[in-house]
Length: 125
Image 1: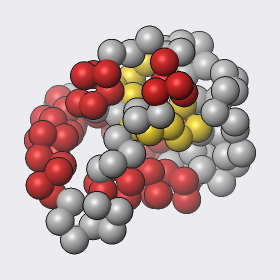
Image 2 (image 1 turned 180 degrees about the vertical axis):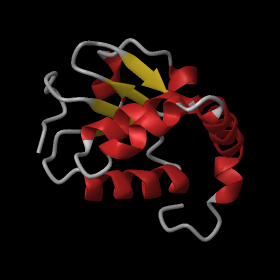
Image 3 (image 1 turned 180 degrees about the horizontal axis):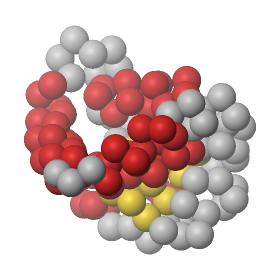
Image 4 (image 1 turned 120 degrees about the vertical axis):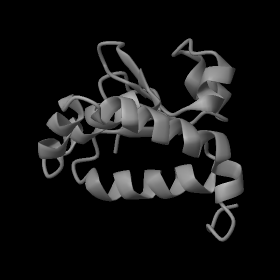
């Protein structure tokens, strides 16, 4: 499993106190059979400090940081995450279909704004 300081693996920064986010991370961990992705809650200040991403941005959306320092936030991270998992790569090109990524951004924003209301009944909250 990648260590928290390993810069050779992609890192997903997420809200560790959000039940919706925790469920999404659980699913991604199941997909990540080769353990290439590091998962870091943004509440781990020491681990996220080296990325230089402002706390309000981290609180607003997940961030995928690739080893080459490219950063994808929110829905823009989804196709990049899918590309990391051999069994899910085929889904990534769907985000290039006109209208899909803008729609995904709207849905992501809707969920992100309401995620603390949506977690009722989700373990971990």
